[in-house]
Length: 115
Length: 111
Image 1 (tube, rainbow over the protein chains, first blue to last red):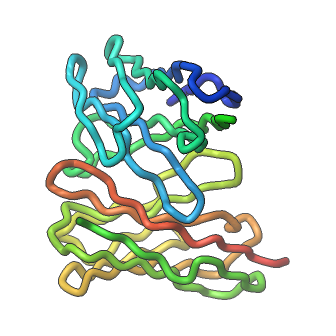
Image 2 (image 1 turned 30 degrees about the vertical axis):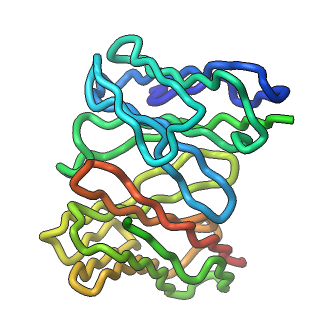
């Protein structure tokens, strides 16, 4: 049972380069999320998609773009990477709204270093 | 802005001890509170979810309580085992359907 799958797992970028993190879920979930995790700061929401065809900004959206390609896939793009974007990125999904008590499932993370 | 704090940041206990992890939040207007487990190099796994109308939830050796009015939650782990070693995070959900996470408590259970 794959759950939430993220690629790549590790990536090193030079400042100014662009890249896309891919995420796919096989649980037929409506909502998908991108978080970043930095030491001592917990996880912070970058963008989310409540349902196919919609995307909304989270707490820290600057420097990122997202695409909800279809119900399964939600990608995160860094257009011009900066050292401040060095972090661990997590994709997650839930059947519907977390506020309604739906469980959220996380991928295993993507370690990104910008030099 | 909602802020979630977890104390202590790290905890080391001998196997078999009962222990309590603490979580506090500044805005009591939450929909629910969740406790997660994170193993090194892995993603988060949801352990317990407490809706705002509930006081506690139990799963096996885990018991989570919620006092919304005081902005506090505790995760009680009974008879701790080395396999419980991990980072435990709490998170609250607000009206915007956004999770706000605490910084986590890193737990080490020594054999």
